[in-house]
Length: 342
Image 1 (cartoon, rainbow, N blue to C red):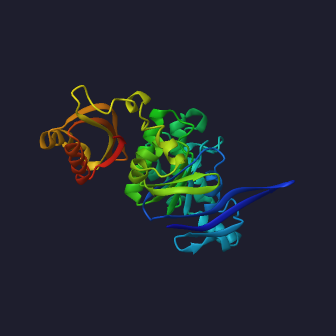
Image 2: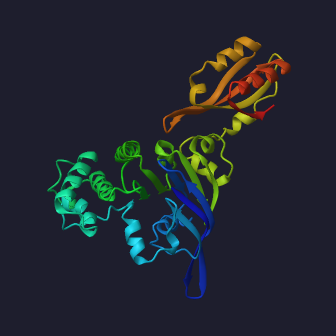
């Protein structure tokens, strides 16, 4: 759906040039929810504004549904943007219009006949759970309700692509979860491609299929969300993941003795569980098969989107050869094993 190649954006200000995007390349597949995460100033807002050409790139290529939009004239851009919905952090609703008329607004611009447009608006308000708010004004709505209006408005012209610019960062955690669930439902029901930017790894964890990490104007890591969570390759990704899944090992655990009181060997390992393996009794099987003791020192289990994911720090105690065989067994069961101390 989206293919970006070598995208560069330079802002020219008096006396200097600011490099906002530096040779960014990424691909978003049709029908997926793709997240871009980065700190403030990393370039993520500039990237999403380039995708709908609110910012003109300095160099590079942006293909949306096979069309090179960087070459479009103003008329072509207006038509293309009708198929690119966008929702914003601060909702951007028209305070003088009712909920119904806010959603109607893009249809008026597109000159959709009033009767057809009215039916479409009614259906969209039902979809986002605001069928009873048609005559209400934005000032009378909660933050979550305002964002639902924004989502309905973004869907008015049957877009192929929905861009979300920090769509939940102004909302409380409970409301954020409800909006993310709504976006997941819309993605499934409409087979709508969703690209969202955020600084919150919880958002990525809950709804995204794939993620790209942007740092200092460059994409430093990208991949399936589960792969990035289970095996982050960059300090930036590890830092974001640590905000939702603590992978740090307490220092006192790293200084445990290399043998127990009876002289048996010990190994300190971290076991990562993903998907079906999170529900299998692999630790008890390890103890039974290899006559080793497993002391659970530290761990957490959560979900990444709809998949169980977790880490356990174990102290394995026994004969050295059996410890090695036990670790091989865990790896053979599809678990990611990191030896922290041998």
